[in-house]
Length: 464
Image (cartoon, rainbow, N blue to C red; front, side, top):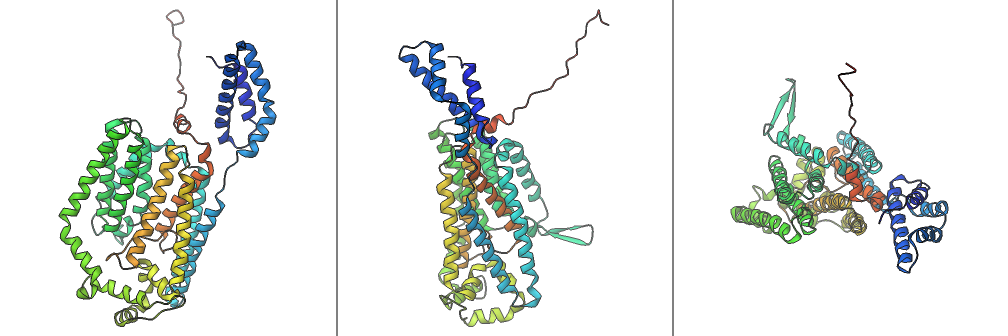
């Protein structure tokens, strides 16, 4: 049945009363649906179509009053509590950096760097928050293709580094080290661009996952490889289980799960001896004190001699290590900030920090799971998985349950690139909570459509 012009005019007039422009299409659709349902119900009772249309408008009310009431309801929802939790974690990181670095005058500039990192990160967070996460969906395919092509080019850089302008040496490891936390978000953007692509979509997603893993292997970091594989695998299985590619949920889940399972099994089989050696280091690091077990011994001594509140003591190896590296304390701050936090401030400080970040992640997940837009879900889940993986890896590393270093503890540990990228991701996450309730995937896709302007030239032989 055709949509009456009076219904369209009524819905448009009511929607124009809303000051939040992003909510107008959603309100207009809801009003049109309500008017049509009410008209159909009246017609089912025996009323003529013209009379039912007029009666439906009368029963609905005045469009200006309805629009004014809806304007009070549809407002951008600022997640104030999440902002406060993120600010507390970031300020705690700044305070701890100042506490450690100011004990040595030569290291005081690290606190300045941390302040600059937080200022830049705050600017990135606010930019992502107000620019809106739907930009990632509108340019999903070109953005994902350019990003993964850049990963391929960066992977071809020399392994150690290269000279720039003869006098500047660029370390490849330092240049690429900050990118892994951003990879799950870009993988989510690619997954959104592959909707309805059927088998080619799954193949493209697996290819992108392989590119990201090869990029991480160039750094190299086993922690990044492991948790990147888990994050991206979870996102891919989530899309497959939702029937995102157009083949049906069962077939998509099977096609996505089989390569992931085969890759996991092959790594466990081929690296069995290596995993056994790492497990031996964790269980008995003193047997490997002359090699890879030395770092584990030092960290474990600092943890064992820590107090619940206040600075703890040291063991024989940790005392020698700190005396030897007293002038280079920021190396430990970058790699094992949580261990130093426990040693300098006590276990209570670690418990408070982990509680703050856990509250941030849990509250964000509970709100994001109610998103109706697939783009909002993918963006929010990618950021939450990235933060959760970084947190878990850093905790396991600093509690000496992993015999190697992790990337970073989100929003807390030192590093301009790490803080900048993590706060940028947090801005997109908070943006989904701000406007995700009025975003629909069809609106994001429609945003790409633009009218084509053509130059029309009328030519006849008579005019010639």
